[in-house]
View 1: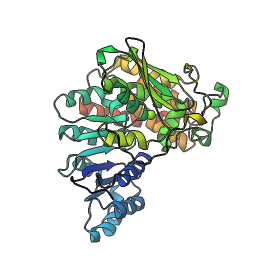
View 2 (view 1 turned 90 degrees about the horizontal axis):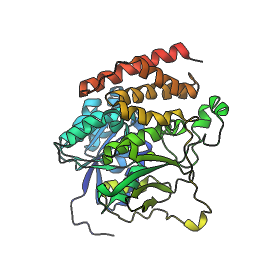
View 3 (view 1 turned 90 degrees about the vertical axis):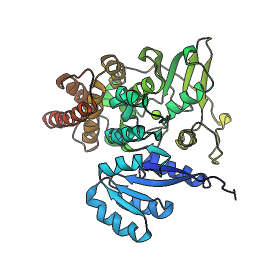
View 4 (view 1 turned 180 degrees about the vertical axis):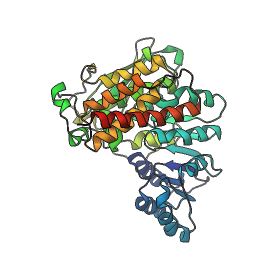
Length: 393
Ligand code: MG
């Protein structure tokens, strides 16, 4: 047993019942008391949240879905665990005094508000919710300039780039090379993709993730989002961020320097590695995770992404060039379109057409305020619903 000298680092886990949340809790358990989950927050899976709270004994458990509050309270109050419900409670938790770091692992747009609150409260952030930077990267950058809050990327590609940049001069970076597995449809034809089922799209070759991000990987919009995320995290112009398809998902991303050297970070496709690196503020501890055995790998291959087959990928450069609320529109239309695809309402290619139709119809705002993002998100979602009703198969 390790003797614990210091007080544990208190972590607010937002999105505790999701794939990243559960893997973060596994790292917290493996940390032998260095980390503690002081807040556990979930969207609507109340039974799972109760189960996690019984194991991790947080100070506070939050359920976003207010209808589930009585169940949560009934189960946890007798144990002395505080409970709360609703979006506001999530924001308060991100700024709470007994929180040292906020892990944002909620799905989609919902990550934005608590991240903003955490930055304003000078809390360090382990950022798993990429949509925050996609939707409002410019606003987050402005807020960060007035805060001591540091953002540690959890996304595996950005963690890899972050690791490759340690000890380097940013002025000597030629470009960031973001690897992409290519998703389940990498080897499919356009005609095959047009008839892809939900099951096909959820069948990711390398990573086991939540449904939303798995569909985003299949359209490759996830990679577009990661290009936007890299733009804001590393302050790099879009022309210096290049995606490359690497089907084995062993190299998690690379950085090319002025002298021609390329640094890469390799690892098994296991999200606990970037999670641990972020929770540890770019330090390395041994969590007894399975090692990478290069001898078992015969080849590592790389290829250009096919923009004809995956038009969503190009939306990154469109959004970064246009700026304003355009990425917010793309994100909101995508969230509605992905949900509709998962419910069998639209075909796989209609995810892209729903996004482009929303982009064509939504008013453009060049320099949005927070309120403008909120309005753009709500209006785009309503518009995307209408478009889907009109076009549904
Ligand atoms: Mg990623």
